[in-house]
Length: 441
Image (cartoon, rainbow, N blue to C red):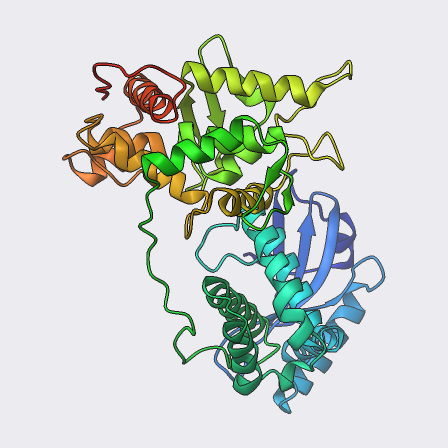
């Protein structure tokens, strides 16, 4: 930060080395700075001591249009203005805040800006970027629940009473866990608004969730699995308990079967891409952006899972000459995968056909995980955690070793575990003769 005797010639010829930036401070005018890049002079700056104790820098001129003499005159004028209590940097910041506040008038405007900040990674309250599927899910909840009630209100009118009325209305409709998610979205959007100086308080804070969430512990019984599998094998001509026709496509049924065999989450299976599969090594590499922990997962594919994937690929290709890039293409766009919600809706329909109450697609993952460490299979808990893509189980060792030093993906152990579970599952549903043992690990 050199202090130099600035001259007209120095200003005109100043140029910093490539990739660097210089700041020359004028000896004749304290606080006046010439900023120089590898393209030449770029800005006139004034640094001053604020009443708040800081030393902000205020950009006030372009050297291409303001010479040294004019810059010195303007700097002294600004210094006199500052001495009178009018700080230009604070005034500029206030003007920008006012401009932004004018553009964001309603709570719907605020939600638009908040969602954009999440999408571009500008807003990361937990120091990590939200996954695309999380953003998509939150947008869906926003459209269905938040915008109809709060979207048209002025930001200042979104108070605690309005927020509680929204949440109470959802509870009255029998909506449970999603009520808490909606509460969280409103709270996060208002926290972002505080950070952007659009509001000064968060009325969604300071009261407990309206829905008391209990961890799900549902595990499918063998007979329930058998009835479900029978429908998944041939999902045509289905009828619910009232005799009404139920439609579930075979590709969606295959996706649910893969969730049951591989114990992956619905979003991981629904988004499966062809370039993630390696049939030569019988593996599937799930990329970090589709994993809950933002870490890739190498899945060992057992034999029946491979045959199901190959069937899905054949159905996806159909009569076309080209194979879509995704295993489960959307009916609207063959280049895009089906939504995870498609599997949830299909499972809801299937439950009505087999009269199974309170069971969800994620319960298949819990069912398989429970079977892995049971007497039936005897898989060590840390191997089960590797199968599920959990990174917190250190297998009896120090957690720090598991997290930061152990880079193994336990592929052989995961393969034995999933092959054992697939064999047991196919035996349960009647597609394979009982084996003498299914021990894995």
